[in-house]
Length: 137
Image (cartoon, one colour):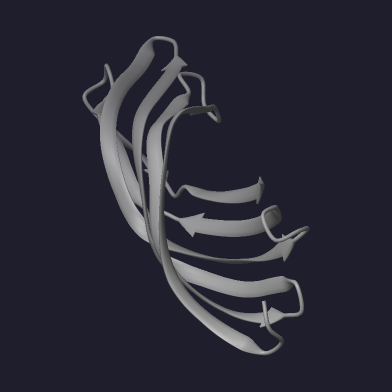
């Protein structure tokens, strides 16, 4: 790598089978991924870059609320689209070996899940997911 060289590129990642829980029934993130562009500068053996682009996630959400004698129960599958931004460093240990670390923030927007309670009133929960991702390779 030469000093002061600029670089421009594109990347795509897809992950599946992640689980997170913040309510009694939980939420299962079935898959999420990103399609990004990156812009960087090479300094000696290091490449410093920023990246940004499109993010998506597929969730199976479940909510359960019970205050006797009333109950509410619902499950939905939702696909979210949003954006991502981050940055990282790649370092050439040798001509054939690199190490890389990267941080990425993803925001998937907001959606709601609704269910009719046993008293006939509709309950609505707002879901506003985001994720922080740190990679080391």
